[in-house]
Length: 334
Image (cartoon, rainbow, N blue to C red):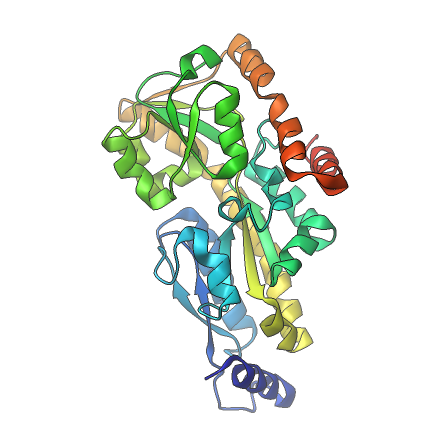
């Protein structure tokens, strides 16, 4: 069934009343690169899909394609625009070329928890340059959330910038690669599902990763040291629907998808924050050294990374990057 027919079916069902119509709408094809066991999927994507299906009495249903089944992590946006998918949970930093302003979340030293960062992102997705950039890319943002601040996972303790010199560090996108370079390391972009093997085989010396996401990739099995209080950047997800499809849905369906998206964003952020304490205790029991960076180490790292924001503005260019960075800073300053 082509997209036009699908939209007509959805519209007819909602127009005449879902309960009165025995016909079930076609499912929307939703892709992402997370596994179904990942906290982002359990408390985010899956939770939202179920809530939307229940709230619309089955007028909107989903076919879920997790773990890169429909498209690789860097191809999710193209898959939506090309009609392979209808909806995608975009890992925004994988699409920095098409969504450069949205990569602001990757800058180090801003939000201190997933809940704080998610509240800031949700505000910026409602109106302004981040939303406009997604719309220009052919998709409508339904909701967004962030992972907890990135920490460093390695086979040795990494503290001050001197410890990082010439190491190959897994980073997510160009913004985080700048963070690695600011400390003298080399940023290497490798999709999440491939990181385990890269560390195990010695292709990577360390990984910048949010702690709540570690179990989803079992990285605790291949590292021995994990920092707990660093601020090496962030990562954002945006649930996006192809704009022509979304605009063809009835207004009440659109509103319900967004309302439930807002609730899901808040929920998945808190779930991630809550999970970290238990994970740290578990890893300690496994013999992993989880450590706080000292005040001197944090000061040295901040000094090394302070130019990343300026470099980001220069690379992105235009007044938009300056406005976005100032807005992001104001929303994450408390």
